[in-house]
Image (cartoon, rainbow, N blue to C red; front, side, top):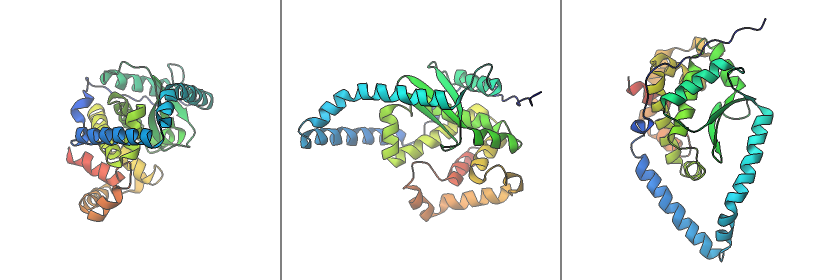
Length: 257
């Protein structure tokens, strides 16, 4: 008889993701759109219209690419359902409903060849990818509910349309926007989970890994997070990243409690 997977729950009422958008996001998006438009027009001019032809052909290219990517995921990972890891699937659907997401969202478990988890969009299809190592880590760390925080974070990206083609391109190239989006997703996920210990556990596990987590002194981590948030060199180093430093993410969460 196979071992039963623990139930992952996410009870609570509806959450409006837009209420948790990080301050400064709107102005950064406007700036990114402005730069993208200017750069596109400039590219069309210097390429003598070739870039315009490429852009007009892009929908067909994207459709073909998305079909291939979807087939790759479907052929390499396990799609969650009521019969395949139903405990994770039900939690994902419950969180999806609480966020008011009406679009279809597929959830796959894949081998650990991407960073922990991610939300992507292939055409109109939204997909959440969870790695086997992430799920194992949540179970082995003694807090399987931490998985609900990770899924809530990825669903927040979908609810806020961070995973669209243009928007995701902007956040990858304008790193400040990428960091703001991560903070927004963390805030939404925290509101959904509603348990500060689960949120703390989830981010801490991403920081140190599940094997060493039982030996971590949490008060020392909190003090280190405060130091990192005030260190000017940490701020300079973070500007090169699309994601905030993990201890800065932890500090932001701690400030809301």
